[in-house]
Amino acid sequence: MVTPLVVCILLLVVYPFFFAIQISFTNRVVGSDGQFVGFANYINLAKKPDFQASIQNTIVMVSAIQIIKLIIGLGLAALLNQQIRARQLWRGLILIPWAMPAFVAFITWKLLYAPQGGAFNYILIGLGLVNTHVDFLSTRELAMPSVIAASVWRGFPFWVISFLAAMQSVPRELYESSALDGANAWQRFMNITLPGIRHIILVVILISTIATTNSFEAVWILTGGGPSNATMTFPVLAYYGLQSLRIGEASAVSVALLPVFAVLALIVAVQLQKED
Amino acid sequence: MFDKPALWQKFMYYGLLIIVAIIILFPIYFMFMISLKQPKDIYRTPSLLPLNASLKNYEELIVEDHFLINIGNSVLVAGASTFVSVLFSSMAAYSLVRLKYLYRNWIGRLILFTYLTPSGLLFIPLSVMISRLQLGNTLHGLIFVYLTFAAPLSTWLLMGYFRSIPVELDEQAMVDGATRLQAFYRIVLPLTGPGLVAVSVFTFTAAWDELLYALIFITSPSLQTVPVAISRLITGDVFRWGLIMAAAMFAALPVMILYYVAQRFVVQGLAAGAVKG
Image 1 (tube, rainbow over the protein chains, first blue to last red):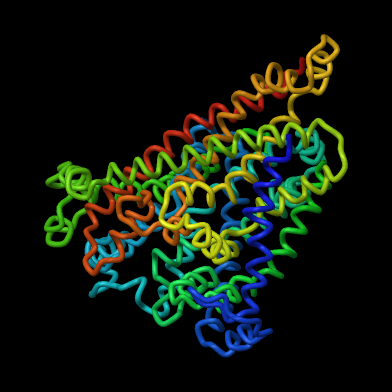
Image 2 (image 1 turned 90 degrees about the vertical axis):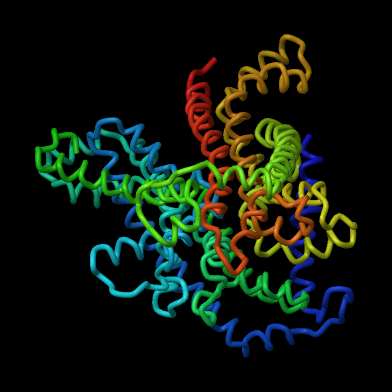
């Protein structure tokens, strides 16, 4: 019964997985299989400014996005875990950005940021905060924060909903006895809620980090990696590599991330098995 | 936490929630509002209100850009890859949860790893494979590629649902003379109904939303799926925002409706699992 799926996975995921690693050690281009070149692609990449930029940008972008989502996620989940009227309704509302297709979310944000016709410029100018149109996505200093803000908007619901579900399964008695001991709300949050949902926090951080690191849409739609590599990340760089038909080198870009992915995935696997 | 919140606390709670609601809803409102506007209204008389609203962009999208063809392509690709992966994965998930055999745990781990494997790693080898198989620029090639994430996703989710159905049910059926396969499709599968719906919705939306593979594997405009057709609209020199947002509405509405429906099934699925026997 499991055979069709296993065949499908071996063919479509496992084989390409190892094939990617193999390609990254060749000078393959479209139309020619190329030859084994050892680490040449990786050595070349290490010297390239766009690759160096993409390492730095990926680290900055992913950590900023994850830290902000963690704070918002915990805060809003804790808020919704209070006595709130129509909790279902608020939860449904918070889910909306996540239910939207990612590319739609980012195209909408591209419009919000637009110098001409965009909402942010209209509001900023209307309030007299700026005199001229701000080009959020083409200004070096603003491009990265703009991509981060849009990514947080699209990604935070998953965190809130997961944390809220976990918080609701923390036994109430723990809170009651601690309230009797005179603990205040902040102490209860730190001593009961956080340890109670520690496991979920870790799994959410890991799964989301894998997804965010490999997110193609946000950067590709909003900035295309620009201005001058200010927001270039691995998946977008690999995509441009494929466009330029130098497959070997492009593959090296995505395989360079593999160790990070493998470590994160292993921790997820261990954590999920603990749960069983 | 269980004390009645004081009045100032209530103010703070709901105040915060309203701010969050505005942050969530404003971009969506703006998207819808711009989709009703013509370029001259967007650029010459910018406003946050839908002045001079019309459905002209939607009309142009359907009549001149043949957007319904793109929607049809998306429905076909997402539907077919969901069907195939739910078919395979319901059998696989059942067997992984219920049967005991060699390497079972390894297969379970393999599925988790493939579920986590990013498309950013696979698109280059897949593009080589697809062109070698002469499946480039075809919808069935794209369906094939979508199984890379659809199959592990639906298997992973379904394993959770099957675990929630008591083993005693299949055992009872088999005591009554049913074979393992009959126990699966007569007893377990119907009980997993809501779960199957939820998993199908998640898988369908994942395929509906997919951009990277579709961008790489489809080149003819008549075969483009919705995400690719929209991204084609934003790569030009002039952004026709009204048209782009109308297309975005077309792309967002079906999945948001599906999600709303699935939410209820997910809750039902959980409730069904909780009621034993």
